[in-house]
View (cartoon, rainbow, N blue to C red):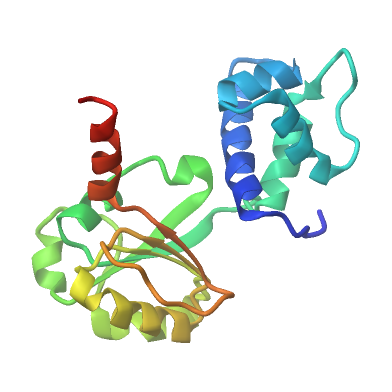
Length: 206
């Protein structure tokens, strides 16, 4: 499928739709209405129809969307026709926990290697993926053509490591470090600040 310019928020919702459609496929469902898919995805039906309009006129009024073809279209649009390689930098406690997570492959991603300043210490955390020293980072990215990275280094080192990743060709970073990273406009950074999320959550449980 030809690549389409889609807003970042829509890309995020398409990923959610794809996950919901996979669950429907596992249950043997052949079609799904826009209202039903919108409900399980947590959006309004009008928003879902607007997002799916990037595929053109798709679905049949009164019958809904064919589950498997729609999931295939979204998968192709998101580039998930094969496992996408990802590296992880910073194999400390958080990094090691993420490396033990089994859900990445289900969603189309494979962590192919991890990097740490102290790889021997990191290996003691039971990491199964290949673990390299931080000095091997640039050579590995160039050889393997990896374009995405998970960043779990301390805040004091995050920007310097990010600079190395960007200069090596990384185009997308999932940032678990507690700092705002400076990157060129063409590099996409998604921040995951666990402490900030808990702070937001605490407001609603007073």
